[in-house]
Amino acid sequence: MKTILKLLLTVTIILSCHAGNAAEMLNGAGATFPYPVYSAWAYDYNKITGVQLNYQSIGSGGGQRQITERTVDFGASDDPLSPDKLQKDGLLQFPAVVGGVVPVVNIEGVQSGQIRLTSETLCKIFLGDIKYWDDKKLTDNNSGVKLPHSEITVVYRSDGSGTTAIFTNYLDQTCADWKSKVGAGKAVKFPIGIGGKGNEGVANYVKRTQSSIGYVEFAYAKQNKLAHVQLRNAAGTFVEPGFESFEDAAETGDFDPKKDFYLWLANAPGKNSWPIAGATFILLAKDKKDVNMRVVKFFEWAFKNGDNKAKELIYVPLPASLKEKVRGYWKEKGIY
Image (cartoon, rainbow, N blue to C red; front, side, top):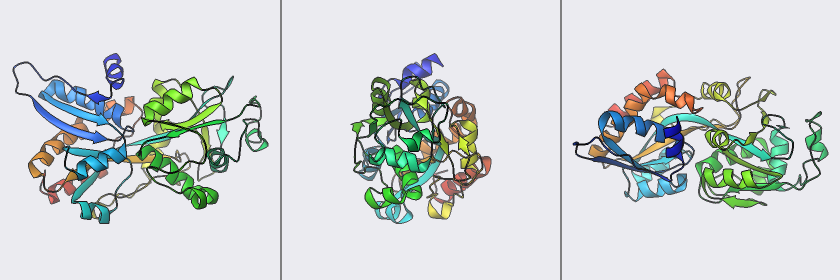
């Protein structure tokens, strides 16, 4: 585990191959959201096969751009592309793993899981309508928690980001003011706050900024020992982020291979579902069949051997039935 965490500190995964084997390289770029689990899978895969994985954790927008320009073997994005967009750019798409985006805070005296937020209060904080932590709208749901009269600093992603797409898609669904004033997407104009590049940048800003709030993929919250919040979900239950609540959200997803698996998981209806869950996706160029088969070989290995490592890092492996749908999709496209 220490070796894995050490790898996560780098921006690029470059793994050495077995001595004596000819180096085989897969080049990918994109989402920071799944970077911890891709790093762990790549480390284990390299030990077994000698294949190197060079994955640039540059954000979903960069991953979409690079695979569209054919400068990488695969792109990675938490912002799923519609079938029309995939058709236009000659791309294929399939899900790899499910995780959760979590609001994280740095408030003096407040521990992880102590503060409760609703979609309304979260929305108003990121719109700048709630300016102080002791605002009545916050204290009403947090009796027994001493919230200071300190001004809130909002931290958001400055780069084109699937994490932002998942987060803003949730706010867009649950908050009419957000929908009308800001909207959803990989890069939106946040009304207030400071921007950090990547999940790493947001985590670092929150960690060193008192009275701040940001949003990151859960593995980054854990690695940086950041305090997460509880959120009230669509069923009206206050839930904490974690494997069980992400899994509950994942089980509600109806991924359709005929639509290239295009689906959002935000605000899932399950009683214990984490409301800001999302799948992360792999993008392939239709015209690169030989390359695609090598990429698929890696993800097929991960589907068969990577579930425990994914769970260890608080990601939800795809259900067996969904893995079979993905394999059927690969076969249909002639890359499996």
